[in-house]
Image (cartoon, rainbow, N blue to C red; front, side, top):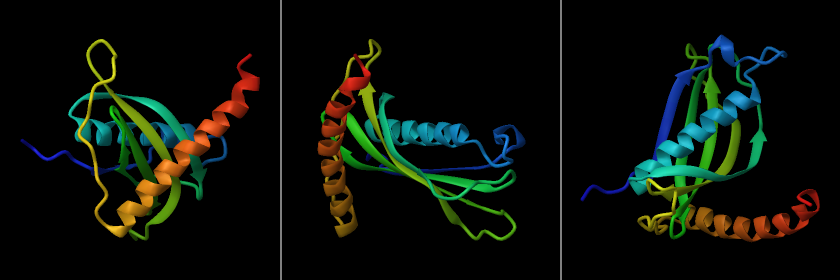
Length: 158
């Protein structure tokens, strides 16, 4: 049996069609790249088709320019029965200098599903290093915070 893939990096160049009216890469384009990396990471871990259940805590730290080399790093930091919490970090640089800078980071929760769209059981991930344990604990804390936020957001769904 092949060991599940816990992390991956997508690399590409930011293109002119990705630019917003301000001349920088559009936040929506960055969010699309994040979703693509989260899918590839979760599919690699679960060996299943996966759907996005949640994206949150997205922080746009610095702009991305057309022609920048963009790297979207994704890694599993928590697993449930069918869900995976994926930590994502987007870095960019001028490909001539390779001085990478953080541009965006967030958490995405993906769920493995079967052909009918029903959740399926996935391999469990256990943290080993101290960094892994800290990220795992943070994912658990964030789950509790999302429950509180969901309750507060009820006012907008009525």
